[in-house]
Each structure stands twice: as C-alpha cells, then as structure tokens.
Length: 166
Image (cartoon, rainbow, N blue to C red; front, side, top):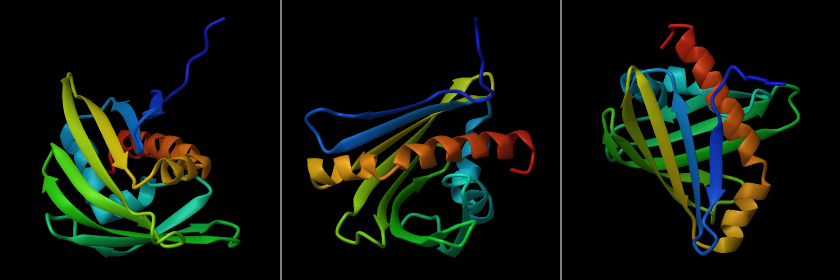
C-alpha cells in the first residue's frame, strides 16, 4: 500500500557532538516566494508555528541590523508565548542570519542561519541551522515540541504559497 501526503518531508536532526539543530525542507515554489514569506511580516504571521496558535507580529524590521518581536497565542486562550531577536544578515533570496530567543527562557538565545537554495523548476530547498550554547539547551529545545511547530508551520507555508497570497 502506498500513501502520500500533500506536503514534503521536513528533516530535523541534531548533531551528536555539537549543540546544533538542522532543519531541511523543500518547497514546490520559487526561492523568491519562499524568501518573501519569511521576510514579509504579514505573510510570516500567517504561517509560523503550529496550527493551534495564532501569531501577532509587534515589531518587524527584516533588514540587516533590524529586529523582530512576535507572539503566539493558543486559540483556546490558555497560553501565550513571546519571541524576539535581531537580523544580523538578510541577503535577498539567499540567506538570513538571526538570533532567536523565547522570552520564557531568555538565557537560551540561538543563532539561526537560513539558506535558500534554488533547485530549478520553481523549487526551493530551505536549510535552517540553529546553534545554541550547550547540548542541554539543544535537547531542551527539541523536547519543547518544536518539531510540531516547525512541521505544521512549513505545511501552512505550503498552503499559503499555493493560495497565491504570497
């Protein structure tokens, strides 16, 4: 029996000897569309995070040297989560380097590099590398349920791009 899913697979891996997490996902959309969904605050708010949360962006300057702040609120109102960081490098359609901090764990800043690779035929590979300050912090990030947020967020990104809203 063969089954298919409407979305490509997201690969999330932790290096056994380094405090890093790598996420890789391919999209059936051009680099320019995927990059725009990452850098346009209104589009970003529509896809980031799990389906059970609504995102509000309160600060957004997605340029080299800029910063951001956004909140995720559970749809049932039981939880609210705040995130912030700085954009260290924004190279259109190529790369974004930023810090990422969950306000509930302010000592856990990570450095994230997103690389957008044109695969041809209107397809894109996104590779995200997160570097944290310890193996314990990395393991806590993985245990936090981040996989659900990443996978569902990328599924929402697929749906957003397919809807020609981006």
